[in-house]
Length: 321
Image (tube, rainbow, N blue to C red; front, side, top):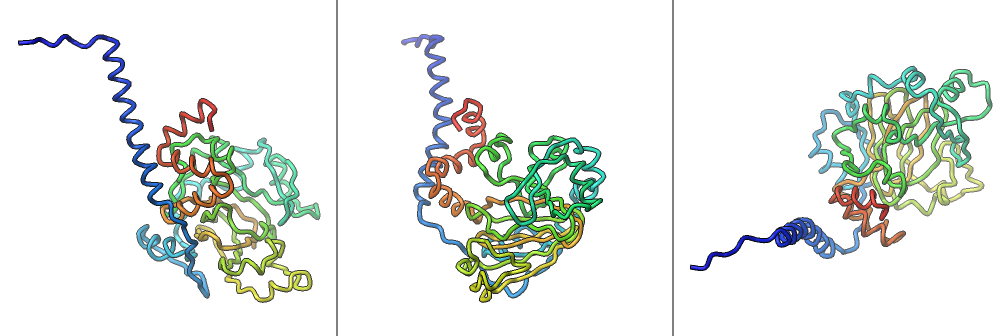
């Protein structure tokens, strides 16, 4: 009988690295092959509506089946009711917890911006002595632990970036959770969301008017130069043929905006809102395809690190992404 000698230390180390390599590389290879198989061009799916439905007690499966999967907007009336931010976040909270933070405020419906502290902006909202209409829009909460610890999205809009480095979405201008604080009549300009992402907007306090348009009307919008709340038809005559769908979003409600839908939002009251662009189970392939058209490397790498967040952490920590 031949007695096999035990493995040497070097052989054990080599075997360990080989095993780890197989464990790491195998799922990556399988996923890459699967993505090559799914390489077909994705098409934007949308459903025209005459009005936006308001739903309550909507299950996640119903939301996917009746709205997200067919590109149809919906207002979910009770979406915010169980969220901590709905009761904790108000103007006094932001003044006391975030007053010294410098933020970017935008001139109404334009790209002109300036820097103010949160306290200065809230004082401006209260006094309204200036003729300016300034809006604290797109305030990324992930940069502020005192905000991020309270944040949780409604169940319909799970956090696609969970497990990734918090700075990664900011570095690559990717979707993230943002706050919108503004006084009556402030507005975000007319636009559709980047990369064919979808979006959600929820109201913590106040009231917003939202005007939406199906993707097939894009040629009427002059690249978003139209102010849909006060359109200049002499300057933008094609807009007269547009077919808007309007909705009023109240405190505690959230709206789902499908990919490719143009929209403009105006505060009807002093308001605090929160929202994010979405990469979800229904639009992810379309998003990845759109990103690849702009940046091929990013477009192929991005779905890989979403599937394997540990890979994103590793590549980000050594500066490769």
